[in-house]
Amino acid sequence: MKRRFPLQRQAAIMAFMVGMTAVVTSLVSGAHLLTIEKVMANQERQLRRALLIAAGLDAGAGLREGTEERLREGPGAGIWTVLSDDGRPQGYLVIGQAPGLWGRIRGVVGFDAEGRRLTGVEFTEHNETPGLGARIDEAEFKRQFPGKRPPFRLAGEAESEAPTDAFDAVTGATITSAAVRDLLNKSAERLQRALKGDAVP
Amino acid sequence: MSGGRAGRIFWSNLGRDNPVFVQILGICSTLAVTNSLRNTAVMCAGLLFTVVCSNVSISALRRWIPGRVRMMVEVLVIAGYVILVDVFLKAYAPDIWRQLGPYVGLIITNCIIMGRAEAFAMNHPPGLAFVDGLGAGLGYSYVLLLMAVVRETLGYGTLWGVPVLGAGWVNWTVLAMAPGGFFVLALLIWCIRGFSFSRGPRGRGVAS
Amino acid sequence: MTHAAGWFAIFLSAVFTNNILLTNYLGMCSFLAVSKEVKTATGLGLAVALVMTVTAPINWMVYHWLLVPLGLEYLRFLVFIVVIAAFVQVAEMAIERASERLYAALGIFLPLITVNCAILGVSLFMIIREYTFAAALAYGAGSGVGWALAILAMAGIRQERLSRARVPAGLDGAGIALVIAGIMALAFMGFSGMGRGL
Image (cartoon, rainbow over all chains, first blue to last red; front, side):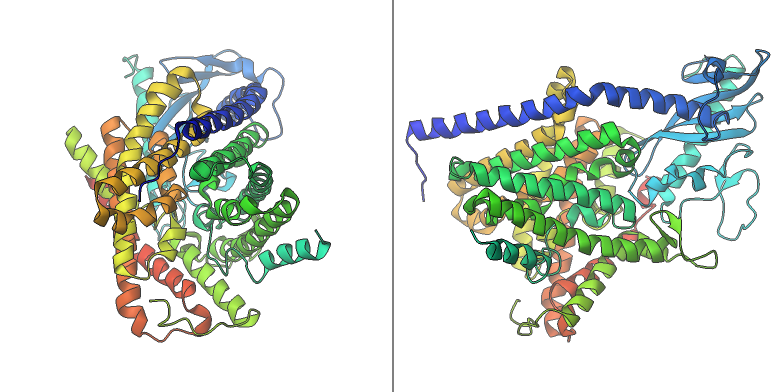
């Protein structure tokens, strides 16, 4: 069964496809260009917010005036310093990442001035399964981190009162939770190296 | 075009020809997110928008679409609308967009949209195609929302993120995970077929 | 860990631990519709495996060499699905001319594949996971094999066991197929964690 069409017909089909593609592409591009600024602003705001939340400076009730002035970049790449009112470091923020179940998980990990205790964790980017791994974004999961000390591990089933180095995994998302653990531990190590003045890889 | 015909098309999509119960279509991308009511609602809204728009567009274009590249054109139109949904969510609901991740894009391959385009929009006028799209989208959405209610309530003890079952509830985590989706849908199909729809001849032995 | 071992790990995890059909529900429609007989399921499984193995690297090249340099990443859904649809159409024509028997076995399934979410899913997830070219190839092939394996197992159960079992009327057909899929998903969950050790 050979399907042969005259050349004009083939050309007409091609032209139709090209035309359709052009129309759809330009519509989509138009929508993209209209919203790109909004999207960029969202991302910028999200990073700022994540930094402040991880530093424990944002209680969710909006930002106080001048809070953002207290963040300084360094020491080392992807690390921020949180200054106290008198200009001394009161904590550090590490932008870390680890491979999750589906893709990279990125987050800001906040530590105290010695890098020995967490002040907060906020995730900025992930592609975990909606409703399972993606629940790391929920306040209930993130609330457990302030005060924990590295190196971290996942709490066992029987540990009702979690010790300071363990945190509760997201139920049904073991790999995602392990990725969060890795992210935290790597961030803690990076901060320690940066504080000792070593080169940060 | 009488209102009666449009009405029949609309209602049959909700009941007798329901895309999920009867045709078992289009559960691919959305089944995965039915462990959370909010995510399901967003996905269903995106699907409703896409199926209505693509149905109308394809129906309006149906006289000019060459038969050989029909599928390509349909896919192109559908993909265009889905990207609009994606872009919109990204700009105005970034938190939800982050939760759903790549699943929004997968609406493109939802068989219902393609199925309606192919089976209905290609040979009906835009008005009826609109009604059909609306019916198919809603018929799909209510089933999935029902599933989400069951899965989120039993799986996490919450509904729309709000705890409803109290602290003493032990979560049925398996319902929130992949196998739970299959079981809940199977049970729903069983219930609904058992209760309301006419039973056809016993399918066993006929199909295989 | 050498590169080859890494690719092998990606392949294995795509087949078993992260089976795209059973953990991500992708490609469910044709999975349920075409799993009544082993023979047709084999045809569809092979076709899906073929298309996935080829389109994943093609889409990788298109994305990294065309879309990223031009800053058009947001068009990826559109471009990926068009690439897949075009490949399916070309493959259909090629198979038709090359071999009557192969066309009879695979041909009717190819149009179904364009709307198989698993194929688009593989292309999207490969980008999200930032795979290299070789890893994308391994992932595409692994997912294809995994999908074929799942539908074959399903068809085997439905043809050999279910045809002799007594199923309640309301659950017959799709309902019981979903229950089986659920049990298979549970079984495949048993593999989880294995890939991490590699």
